[in-house]
Every structure is written in C-alpha cells, then in structure tokens.
Image 1 (cartoon, rainbow over the protein chains, first blue to last red):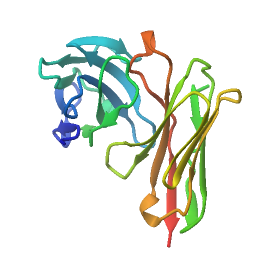
Image 2 (cartoon, one colour):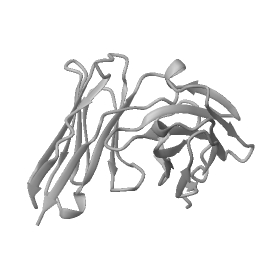
Image 3 (cartoon, rainbow over the protein chains, first blue to last red):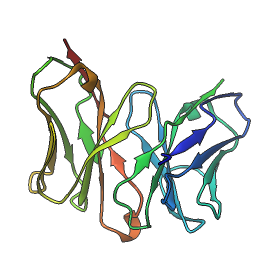
Image 4 (cartoon, rainbow over the protein chains, first blue to last red):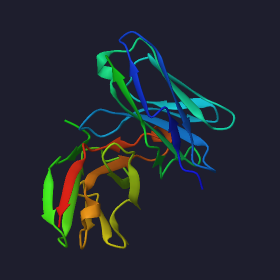
Length: 113
Length: 114
C-alpha cells in the first residue's frame, strides 16, 4: 500500500523565482492538504483540496496556489519566492472532506537563496 | 498567544523511563486531537488520534485529553532509543469551516539514551 509521495525531495531556488511541488496521496485517499514547516517549528496549514477545489485556506498570501487533479494528486505553486519561503513543505492526505486522520508524506525541502 | 503551546524541550531521558509530553490550547472549539512523531528530515507520522476528552492506549503509548483544562498529554512507557524524535501535538475543530486545518504545537524534541 503506497503511502503519500512527494517530489522533488530537495529544491534550491533563487529569490523571485517560481516553484512547483508535487504530491500523490495515499492509495484510497481523495483529499490533500499542504503545510509549511519552518526549522524548529510545527507545520503551518496552507490549504486543502477536495474534489479538485480549494476548500480551506490558512494565513498564506496569494503567492501560494495549488491544484488538484482528477486522480487526486496535487501541486503546490509558489510565485515570487522570498528567503522566508525556505522550509519543509509537507503534503498530507486523508479520506473525505470531513478530515480526521491525516497522513503525511516525507516533504520537499525548499531552499531559497 | 499561540493557539497551541508545546514546550520544545529538549527532553532527555534514560532508556526504560516513562515520558510525559504535553500541550495546552486556547481554542475551545478543538475536538480532535492527534500526536505525531517526526524523525529528523522526515514527515510527521501519526501516532495517536483521539476525539474529545478521555484516554486512549495503543501499546506503549497513552494519549489523554482534558477539555475542561484545555490540556492534552502523551505518555510513552518503557521508552526506547528508537523513540528519539520530535513529538508534535495537533488538533482540529469540528467540520464546516475547519475541515482540513490541523493546528500544531511547536514540537518537543525527545532523546532516549541507552
């Protein structure tokens, strides 16, 4: 049973660039949530996708956008990168919009220079 | 004030000790409570999930929720060096506007030494 997968593992970008991160949910799951985890901090909720729509959004600017595909996989896009965007980006999957247990992927470590 | 407060530690205990990890929260709407374990440079792994007040036991792990005090705990019995990790508490409100948002504590770094 495949768990949550994310790509790439690591990424280095320059300030001002744009980045796309990818996530495939756990088999049987249809909901994907994205989190940002700064070093030494707990994850912060970015947004959640269910039925290909953004259902809920955390306190992140519009530079952060996403998409969910018919196969339930998801992308996180970040435009105009800032140094402060350097973090571990985590994808979590769950079943149904009445989310309870969320299962996390290994994350993508983004470094902005 | 953060919605969820968690002492970051670090906490260092000898092998075999009982470990107590705690979080306090301010949002009385939180109903679902979780504990995650995160190894260095890995994603969080779900350990325990509880709903509302009470205790839940799973092997060496026991989760406690006291909604009246807005306080949750995770106990680890017979701790092992492999338990060395960061432990994150997380919580969520009821459905509706809080479908997917988990609110996390800062995480407590635990080291179990042989």
